[in-house]
Image (cartoon, rainbow, N blue to C red):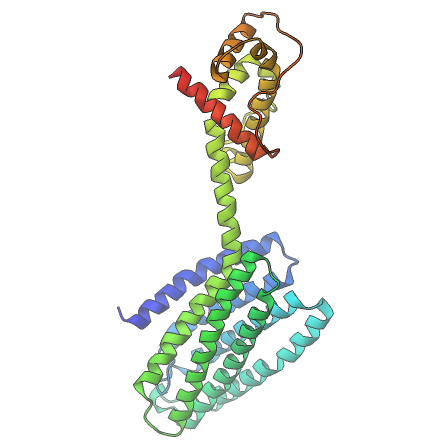
Amino acid sequence: MSSKVTLIVVQGVILFPALLWKSYQLTRAPGDVARWMVTACLACFAAAYPLGLLAGDVNQPDPGRIVPLLFQHVFLCGLVFSLACFFLFSALPAARARRRARLELIPPAVAILVMATVTVLMPDVPPAQYPRAGVSVFYLAADLYLTYGIASACFFARRYARGAAPRLARGLSVASAGFAIGALGGATLIAVVLVHWAGAAIPWLLVQATVWLVFPSAILLVVGLSYPGVATRLAAARVWWQHLRTYHRLRPLWTQLHEAFPADALSRTPLGRWDTLSVLGVHRRYYRRVIECRDGLVRISPYVARLDGPLPDRLTEALRAHARREPAPEEPMPLAIPDGGSLDEDARELVTLSESLKAAAA
């Protein structure tokens, strides 16, 4: 497999999952204009991707069929315009952003008009026999706008990243690197068009530069735009896994307290199989278990107060005394109190006690 084909495959592997992810996010916030623009950007990219494969080699002077090339570059223009709108609607008031967006629509409209005119006037001959001037004008119109739009996006991305939240700032930094490389790649494409139009031999190094600049820039663009959402989900997954582990690690303590005080259960309705593994289901069970353990410790603490020795041993003996219905002082005492006041810190202290009980029973 050639290096170019490898880059194309990697591009597709990253692109289409990113589009699915952004489409899912859009369903959660359909009124977010900036998110619409990012999704439109990736959708245009996804539409241009198979058209580029269908058209064949897009490097001059070996163009593919002109009609697939036209639609491919229309979608690429839509990609760049969507990027411009994303930054405009993210950084400016809605009314001002709409005015700027209408102005930004003029350059791609001109480029698409030129490309469509060339396509209509192109003679019905094999691609290798296309008139040099027609091919050059087609690519020059597309590459000039794409280079302008990508360079503008690089400027906006770096400017917007300065005041953005950390995750968004990191994503925009990655995207801006892709924009910078893409703008440089666009400049090399323009150079290739001009050399080809002049009838001179295109240097091999210049042709390779277009591949090694344009494709990596597209990958960085997709990664950068997807990073904030993916990073947020990864952070949520870490919390989900932490709550699931804590839930199970509290089982020894919870089991003993629940047997002693079954009425303290927050819910006696069994959870469904999906709810057991869902994000909200795990968090809900975690919170319930921590609260039920803490409530049980408060209720058993009067029995513990009159005993001596390590807390796990005292707790075990206190539960036995409660089971025998022995009288106990009325006043509770604090047990396994965390240093901080958060629920997670409380859970860590309870886990320590639960694992001590498990070790003592082993």
